[in-house]
Length: 112
Image (cartoon, rainbow, N blue to C red; front, side, top):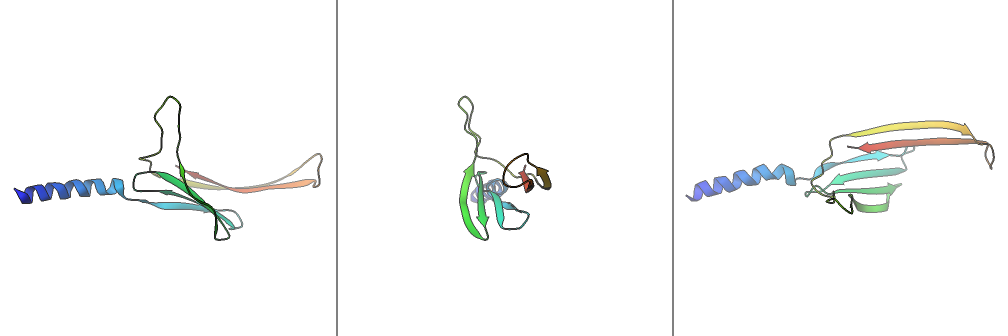
């Protein structure tokens, strides 16, 4: 009887292991590489992000989630299913101010 219980317990533990495992973090950096944003998922499926600038932490790991007044909060059992990085670079002319030309350059980072 003990081998059956052990096998059943081991099977349940192995089945639950992928759900409890941490996902690999996803990271994107600014166009010049100075600023990096990392999104992580912990073993409970909680999302967090951190920001560094030139290798120094600017925002330490901070949780992400949604709190609603009339719905259940969304904070656990999240997974990262993909990511997209898109660069944008344009220059536009402003009608007044110190500079006539303004450069709008950024890298967009979407985590699914």
